[in-house]
Amino acid sequence: MSKKRDLMYITAGTVLTGVGIARLAKQGKKDKKVNGIDQVLKQIKAPQFPDRELNVVHYGADAEGQELSTNAIQSAIDDAHRLKGGRVLIPAGRFMTGALELKSNVELHLHEKAYVTFSQDPKDYLPLVLTRYEGVELYNYSPLIYAHHAENIAITGAGTLDGRGDEHHWWPWKYGTNGQPSQDRDRQLLFEMAEKRIPVEERVFGEGHYLRSSFIQPYQCQHVLIEGVTVKDSPMWQIHPVLSDNVIVRGVKIIGHGPNTDGVNPESCRNVLIEDCYFDNGDDCIAIKSGRNEDGRRIGIPSENIVIRRNEMRDGHGGVTIGSEISGGVKYVYAEDNVMDSPNLDRALRIKTNSVRGGTIEHIYFKNNTVKSLKHEVVCIDMMYEEGDAGPHRPVVRHIEVEGLKSSGGRYGVKIAAYAHSPVTHFKMKDCVIDDVAYPLSLEHAVSPAFQKVVINGEQINSLKSEKQSF
Image 1 (tube, rainbow, N blue to C red):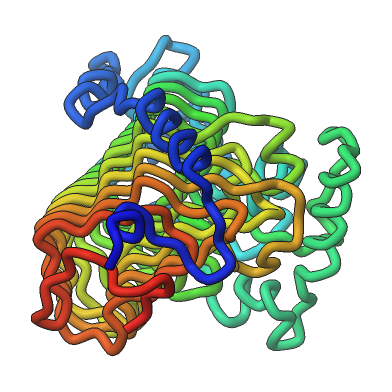
Image 2 (cartoon, rainbow, N blue to C red):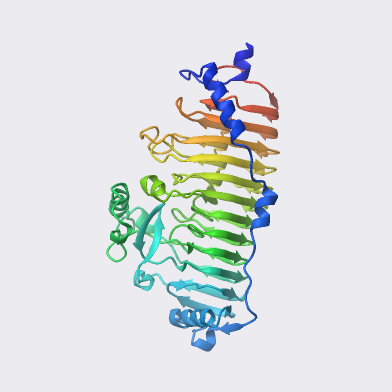
């Protein structure tokens, strides 16, 4: 193999001249790693609350769950906010509620024997609120627990929050099953409105429409803590902070096998810590996002400075996923010391975008993660997702580092499917052992991927053997 071929890996049809290589190298030098996990963690602070407690039962909440307690719980939250902060306690018992709105300086705390169920009647999620649906802003049914422009808010305790999504309520809207309407018409209408830049105030859905809400959504909030609770069976995405700064999700169990029941989806958020959680989901365990297509570019705010550590991940489409609503970009993600173990987990690290989405994805660090079982790809970078190369918005994927990975099972060890006009750059793997995959590598349009002490199916991967690497 020639020295030139040692320095650069390209697939058939990719042409990069010496000038092009120099430009990429210069770009890499300019784009130095300016943040580190320690620096990010120093910026993330948990909210603090006054030593004041308000019990929702004292406001008339029904601890037997026969009557809706929405007004009682919301009144306690409103009073705590009016008093400049405090803890709203949901004691032992079974409670039923509609939409709740957290407000500044309020901690909603669930006793370990508190079980909160949410109404299955869409009317209990009115009035409409500003929210996002699949990365696009609109006015829609409220998320089950919502906050807007709030600071210092928390959901804590060892109790359970049950969204009661099932095959008869919420989930059928995905496909129009069990005699329920389908979301398809409304979803397409919303996407068309966003592409035409119709003002958000005119994107009014809710009653008569069938777009599912997220479970917990802090929207444009600061200093958010979600800790200890079990969150299950959301209508759609389960924990979905949007345009928020300083978010901690810690020690939470997130369970749900309905359509699109992702675990934690930070979207256009900054300074996020997700640690010591348990995921068992019908979609991605964690999916980092930043808005879809024209709406994501209009808002133009990336997700950045995100730490994901010591989590246990079972079923899901991806353990740590970036995309596909990614038009605002993502940078500086640190995923460390996570354990993934399920034959129903599709991928460990997945990056998905295309030239309709666009966006820049960079500085992704996947370190010391263990994958005990898996279905498809261990590491996957996919620019062919959904629409493929059908748009004018060139995606950029660069500075992806995988270190200390131990994995067993799956179809592909590493699969990269990029474009000739936008190859993946600065992809590195170091000290990794991947066993029992059907295909060790499939790399299309990656510039000089680096493998140092990487063993796949017992074979050391130190250099690339051909222009089109697939074996």
